[in-house]
Length: 165
Image 1 (cartoon, rainbow, N blue to C red):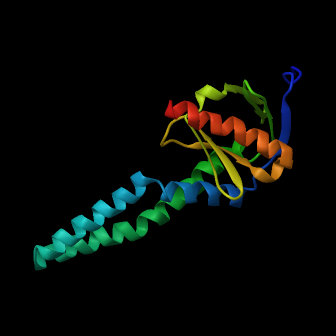
Image 2: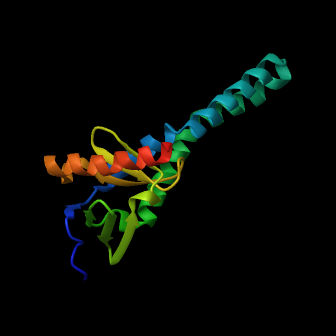
């Protein structure tokens, strides 16, 4: 194993299964694409309902689909997490001005900051995305010291500034 790059900071973390499922599901159902799909289905249901009695059953089926879609999405997230056990294992993140290195589950992945397209955060996590609408690398803020939080946030915000330029 190579030594960490100069001037780098390292953290270790592990996201519990239920927490990971909750975070991934929450991000999935808040995506504009998911919300638009549900909205379009509801518009279609309304149009079928207004079309007359023959359209009522179709409208009901579409409404049932809209109600069940979040349940199916939740089950899909659970299946993905169960299938990808490497997501649950302990990880080490080493970061500096050049990029970050993720080590865990027998894998080592190095990324320059410019490979990330979106950096975002919520109260408990940082999210690094390779595409604007794709899945994210999830990093818990609880793994950072206060000084590391500030430094990591600066690097992440630079990703967003680079995207805007």
